[in-house]
Amino acid sequence: MTIPYTRWPDELASRYRTKGYWLDLPLSDIADRQKDSDAVAIIDDESQISYRQMALASSRLAAKLQQAGLKKGDTALVQLGNNNEFYLVFFALLKLGVAPVNALYSHQRTELFSYAEQIKPALLIADRRHSLFADNQFLDQFREQIPSVTTVLMHHAIDGDHNLAEWLTTPADDFVADPNAADEVAFFQLSGGSTGTPKLIPRTHNDYYYSIRASNDICGVDADTRYLCALPVAHNYPMSSPGCLGIFYAGGLVVMAADPSATQCFPLIARHQITLTGLVPPAVSLWLQAISEQGNHGELNSLRVLQVGGARLSETLARRIISEIGCQLQQVFGMAEGLVNYTRLDDPLEIIVTTQGRPMSEDDEVRVVDEDGKLLPAGRTGRLMTRGPYTFRGYFNNTAHNATCFDDEGFYCSGDLIEITVEGNIKVQGREKDQINRGGEKIAAEEIENLLQRHPDIIDAALVSMSDELMGEKSCAFIVAKQPIKPAHLRRHLREQGIAEFKLPDRIIQQDELPLTPVGKVDKKALRQWLTEQQK
Image (cartoon, rainbow, N blue to C red; front, top):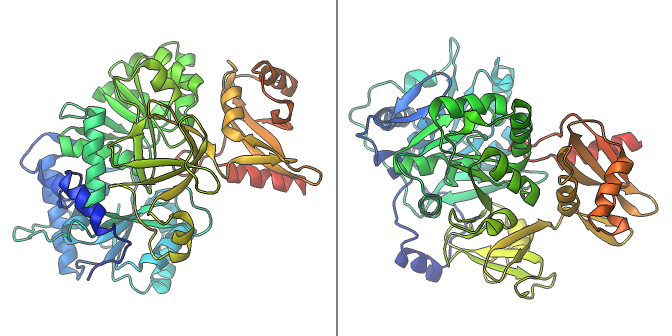
């Protein structure tokens, strides 16, 4: 049995194979490459495992799952945190041809039910330390509502559970891996920008493996790379850009952090001599604040490259990374749906701090179009359209939405507003939905956020809309600052940047911190909801 998905046209698939983007190898090949190595592969706060142990444990788990009736074409729902077991499970499922949805550890009942209802999993793997699974109340409800589940495994198991740890250590000398074909679905990725019912992205072995290998080449990853996984392990960015999978491919070391805080990460970087990690901009702001308070960045001396992606990095923060952390900055711009862009490590400084890089290959095609779909020249801002060997061709079982976000040539509309420079680098200007229409005048949230962050006391800023009977929408800026700042002072600061009067925030609210989504982006939906409640 195979999982249905929207395939690439034969002409493009042939091109991608001919050019070596698609190798027709399963993703489990990443674990097999180092199966005879005793080098340490992963370290978390409880243990460490070698590459040999990773390959063996994942095969043992696969054998037990096979004995339990799991088979090629089945699906699984997995919710594990930043620990070694995440990748032991991931590779085990790949070896069986079972396609998982990897839920973020922060996801709760609504998300888990939504994913399960879409994929109808035969297997659930979860953690007893997660609040949902601390007892059997939710688990019993889940099994009743999702009758397709035949097997449940628990990390940090209690009496009566099928114990994940035991299944990882049960001998399986006669197991033979049987992954599905490389042009079939390997797993499901979570859409990063969806609202309402979460959408699922079917990822094939071919397209995902291409992204990992290409990312490694661009980012200079090799066996000496020591990578800190600071963001949620199930998120696309720390999985493959180049992420943990890129490190495993090269034979380097992955260290798991519980969260991206400076308190958690700085000691790990020093202890394990980390050379590479990836963050989202809000976490960067907190790191810089911690460095300012400590008066030095001594714990980060081993760090060679800091990748920043997930949201647009302001030029102000970009320059501070280089001057205050003292390492190489690499900007990353992409989406779970496909298309990854990187600034190159040898790019001039001005390109690194002012752009979000360029695609991995010439066949990662990018167009900038206006509202009518007409191509725009270099230097003009418009809607990003893309297709390529890593960009998917359709959400899982979502024909209606697919019809609205793909054009007739198979180019995907990401919702990003970008400009392409004459040199071919991308500048992200914002999101189509991240504009505030103030009485007919449109305000790009990112523009104002970037200008606010130029103020020396501002740590983070977010601009959101608030309803207004007269204007339709007005703007409200939420800020995090080192000390109390009067709104009048900030408006004066913005005026000095030379912006139009209508772009000045109608309201400014200072908070100790901004709410974040599970992947570490500022949760603007939560901010807008809070404003709405305040207006009632």
